Amino acid sequence: MPGPSALFRPFSLGSLELANRIVMAPMTRSKSPGGVPGEDVAAYYKRRAENDVGLILTEGTTIDREGASFDPAIPNFHTEEALHGWARVVEAVHAVGGKIAPQLWHVGLARKPGTGPHPDAPSDSPSGVLPDGKVIGEPMTAEDIADTIAGFAKAAKAAVDIGFDAIELHGAHGYLLDQFFWDGTNKRDDRYGGGLVERTTLVQEIVRAVRAEIPADLPVILRYSQWKQQDFEAKLAHTPQELEAFLGPLSDAGVDMFHASTRRFWLPEFEGSDLNLAGWSRKLTDKPAITVGSVGLNSDFMGAFMGESSQKSDINALVERMENNEFDLVAIGRALLSDPAWARKVRLGQFDALEDFNAEALKELA
Image 1 (cartoon, rainbow, N blue to C red):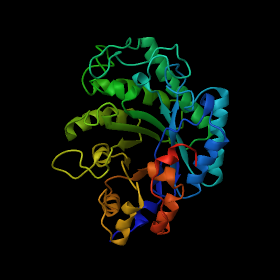
Image 2 (spheres, one colour; image 1 turned 90 degrees about the vertical axis):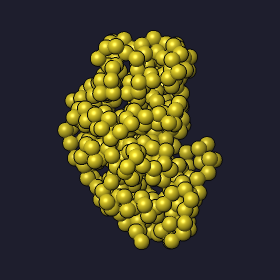
Image 3 (cartoon, rainbow, N blue to C red; image 1 turned 120 degrees about the horizontal axis):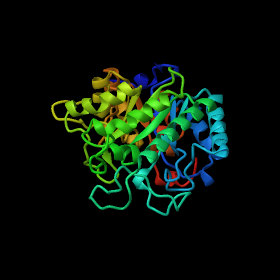
Image 4 (cartoon, helix red, strand yellow; image 1 turned 180 degrees about the vertical axis):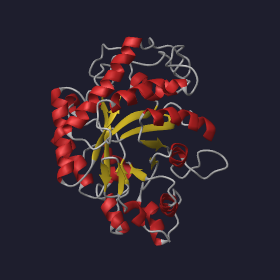
């Protein structure tokens, strides 16, 4: 019977050296008043790092674009005060031997007009339309797009200056970059629109701009998803061939690792194969992949290590997939909110001590 040892093998990619394969998934907390992460945010990430999380991916942190955020308490990745706050976070995580990457974010049309730190700013989007075809805004102009690309590049340079260990771009879940990917929201007739491959153009340009501002060996991670918050059944790619056509240009542009977001990691992505989305990402690009989706939500999940059945998912299957090199890293979300020591307890075999996820954990930075 597999044990957790596969989760605790070292991993390296460029300049990124990790002690194990466990990643803290990005989770919006809205605990940064005025967009500035404080000492409580630094302590929050430090607690996970000192309890054996190999890589921390921060909550989404917004680039320097007025419509990028829909909540004044979401952390920014611009302004001197916000970057100083992030420097304290990096210092705290590094002090306990951890590694950390910011998730750079623009929410796009997920922001309702009149919200966020700049309520008078328009909400950016490819075409100003919702997936149902309702027009609620104007398409981004060429100048808007250029400013957005520059905003991501500027944030990447700041991340390097601060001392982050990698960079993740949020291209999933129906936010701005994903809105350009998705035919339901991208109706443009210029080079940023068109077929599936053409709709990757904006993110290709962002990746190249980011790469130009960072060391060649600093990894760039792209988080992407098929599903959207507006549509759990949405698909960018319906076949492996379509997924290869989608991922290829992004890989060529300089993405070093794909963070394939699914709601259930154990579900096959396409008929005729057991591979999940991360597995297909790795197979089609030969780049490392992170799997995520309902991993470790409660102690029943970990009971599989002790021979117990699990109705939610099977930890043995997760470990076997990793041992078979289907994917490289495993991102843990909600389980780490309720239990900062989740990874350490798993490493030590203390499964009975795991705390079940409780929505109360969302209220405070514990």
